[in-house]
Image 1 (cartoon, rainbow, N blue to C red):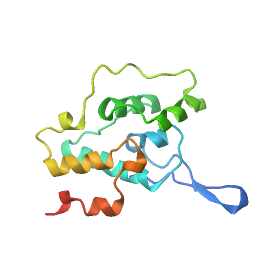
Image 2: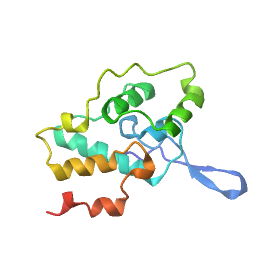
Image 3: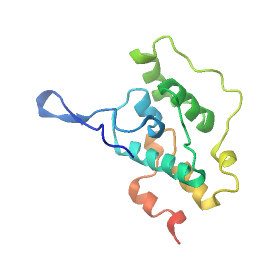
Amino acid sequence: CDFGFARLNKLEKGEQEMTDYVATRWYRPPELLVGGEYGKEIDIWAVGCIMCELIDGNPLFPGENELDQLFLIQKTLGPLTSDHYERFIKNQRFLGMKFPEIQSLDPLEKKYFGKIDQKGMSFLKSVLKMDPSQRMSAADALNHPFFDN
């Protein structure tokens, strides 16, 4: 993960939040790409992306820009959540843009067939959930059966 760009923004009443530009584009989850706020779930997503890259030496989602990044994610994991899509259409950066039609999915199972066992695939699918509220927590990730040995 690349936290070199992470910064605190001061809000009203002395509150602070993290900037949304905290990591290299290839490791950013959909909620951050569409303009959502930084949260722990973002780091869990990055762990999954990095693990995929360790498996075969290639980045999982090597998008050329944010729109391409979102397209590649959807081509592998399916459509954006309704919240992601709503943020996408309201985001000024994406005004007038739309995704190319996805003819067929290229799921994780196909990408990593024969390269990772069933426990590893279960781990990947648990940390690369489109909905950040459904992603495994860091504590649960450490206790995942993939790490038993």
